[in-house]
Image (cartoon, rainbow, N blue to C red; front, side, top):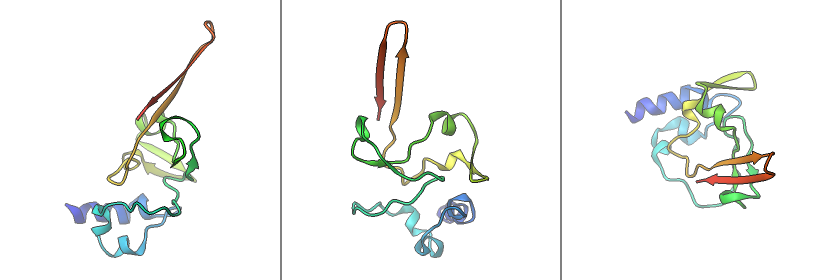
Length: 118
C-alpha cells in the first residue's frame, strides 16, 4: 500500500513541473510517512500557490496557502499553469492545519461578520 501511494506521488502531479520533489522522496517511499520537522525554513509552493503571511484570524502570523473553498470542494480538478491537478491531492497526510475563513455581509443591516473555522 505504501509503495502504491509512493508511486502515485512520484509519477503523478505531486512531483511533476511546476513542482519538485526532493531526491529523498524520489529514492524511497519513507519520506511520505515521516513526521514534519518543526524547524523553520523556506516553504515550497503547493499546487501552484506561493505561501503568504496571514495577518488575521486563527492563522495570524503563519505562512499559509490560501485557496477558495469551492476550488477544492466543488470540482475534481484544478488547472494551474495549464496543468490539470486532482483536488483530492491538495489535503494530504502532511497537512497539519486547515482553516476556513468566511466574510458574511448584510448590506441592508450594515453588518459584516468574520467567521473562522479551524
